[in-house]
Image (tube, rainbow, N blue to C red):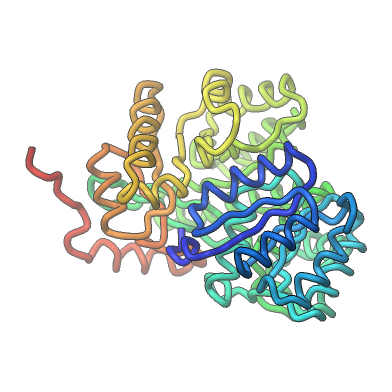
Length: 411
């Protein structure tokens, strides 16, 4: 996680208690400087007037008393925030109008998030904000006249405008490349490379996430085959939305694809986000069990950030546990986070699972994970996501660094 996040001041405006608590938990897990919450617009304005402006407001629209749209106007006129993220499941046209209005009022509009908030989506938005431009040279914000809509997204899927970048996963004991995670990017014909924070929430809410994911799996398999032809077998992890798990035909579809390309299923690692909601548990368990039966690797992503961690581990035959970067990036300076990381590693090893520490940003993070016997590291200390054709060049440069294997301190 970018250390700049620790300087952020954020207010959450949400009238529904459950949604407010979920949002508060997600934001608090990112270890920002100040977090305020409010149930009404009037309370939010009073807090901001008393405690001073914040960087960002996460704002619901349908509120009792003063609605969120009017609140945003007051927020801008009184200069009580720098930017706003809309929290709403309302019609997309209303949300786009509010985002447009926010920018016209001089606020930075980072987009919208469906409820309940997903940690990864929020974290990506905050990274967009604190860096002024997105990582990997993405555009930080889309001009108001170029706001994206569902028709554009559907056409982009049909025209194969989405591409994959790959982030290396390396062994902590010797630094060797062991796998990569595939991350989707939109190669827009006019706007250039667009960060997923701008399109994934809309794709999930509109039902387009499944065709996009199938396209991304096809790209990943093509890349695995290309590396095989170069004499390398590099597994690729790819995220599977929980909404897709009720499709029990997925295992057969992927088996057909891998068999047709003569690719071992184990080279495709399907990552399931632990905090994602599963609508039909029985169908999801069938799908996941059949994935495992046919040799696909299963990974539980962002472990510890949801509500049913132990139940998920008990129900689903995962082979890999990914420790969320909100714990990893703070473990060197926070004993509680370090204890959580250590406990997760110990639990995973007892269950014969490999562990991946996400968000490794510094040598200290690397050393800490190594000392706690974590298996694999992933993060910007190692490499940012990159196009496939640059991966092997990166690997050569990475392995030339000395030392890449830290030593354990003497006892």
